[in-house]
Image (tube, rainbow, N blue to C red; front, side, top):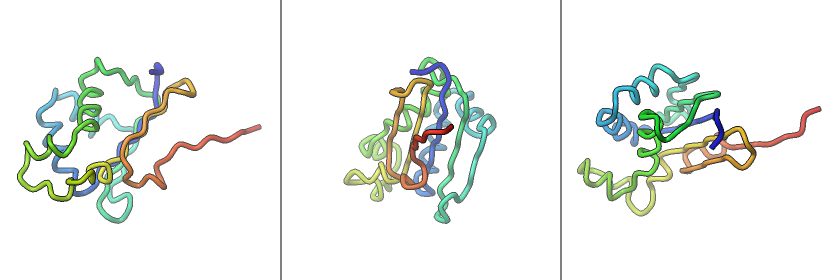
Length: 131
């Protein structure tokens, strides 16, 4: 993992209450990191209530509680969601990935993470040659 990363997290309107619930169970630094230390936050990104958070040149280490909180949220699955809320029908049958998008680019070319499909046509990695 690179020393500094560019990170984007998109959360659908349906998933946002679960994301907020997850953050409430984490260290206070996680909430602060997500809502006060983002470089950019776009609400209703896609016209359907999706919120996009982005961080530029951020230290992204699992040992940081705020990073662990986000990584744990990304790693959630429908079994976990079923244990914390009654109505998870929209997340059944693998639909969880359609409600999140996580992209992290580290300093080296092979230091890339991608999860979920929400807004994947807009939130994507692109490479180009400049001169």
